[in-house]
Length: 450
Image (cartoon, rainbow, N blue to C red; front, side):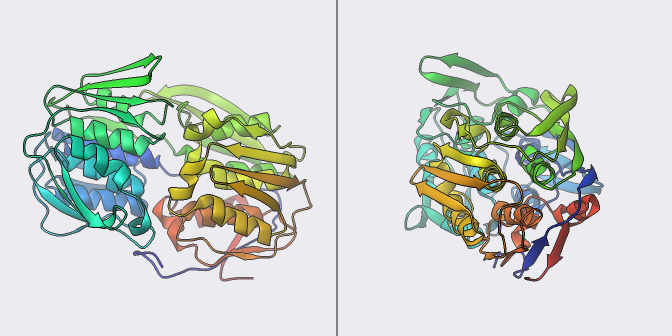
């Protein structure tokens, strides 16, 4: 069970056409960062459209523990009175980040170059995830970390009293690692440089620039080189959080596989480092269009219209696209089950160390529902059965993973027999309105197993 809820079994059954407008919550990545950067400003940052899921609320509580005044104004509107770069106070208690790998890794980075000590923990899933990928580069600044065997939570971070700037090559594509290093670099003198061979989601770079940091991004033969000048005075901002493309994936994918569906998902962030799923679906033959394309808060945004697409084909997803859709592979594998032919997904070893081993969790659940899956250390392949041919009928283990739980709920909407999960409680970490939103569109998701 998660740290926030007792297990909630859920079942999804075949339904009629899905239709209507799906107003999904705010972007989780931007919500985390707006709270953290707001806490590192002097003055008041206001935020509208904040995702009020468990993960982000845990980050809000953490910022209060570090001394920021964080206030829920209602209706997704929040206020953060920050303490300035290097102004974090030492927390009185343990910082519980619940299920959020993004939250804990970014917060570790933000406090790593202040002369304070903080201890972090989380739920059973988060406490099993590797933190050395963040604490190793933070050590270059002079930070110390003491945790459980394998670099796992609970973990105590001792911030560097006299931090030095670093130059760090990110060994695996990870926006969390990159962002942790950049946030640590804010309170280090001189220039901190991060180099990534493959571009990952760039919300941190965009938001740092928006908050007044001196940051430069250059594409070179070495990779993407990000240079941050330390010890700026960040300027308090108003942040209008776009809607989350990772959450939009679920009503979009449901509409593609449920006969007769036509769903509009408005105001979705289409940052090119996040939109890989939608590109992939269109390559498979999905009837998915972008309407009212625009720019909001420096991010590209559009309304997505998804219609039932019975003739989708399996494809080979380019490995270079993995970083832009790493959280969407579970639900993509569900769509692939209803396509014709094999969908091959390579370069996805990062899925092995998310909230769960997502390849293993999805492969077991898909097989139990009658779908053929092959897998390796950093690849997996789903052989689609075509529209109307997915048996369903199984209960799947969600592994304390919100995206696993929601993906199997989408599968049940078009399978021949209901699909259940043993625990849907983790869904609240990222998509607290998932059940009522899908019900409003016409889905049949109920509490309990079939």
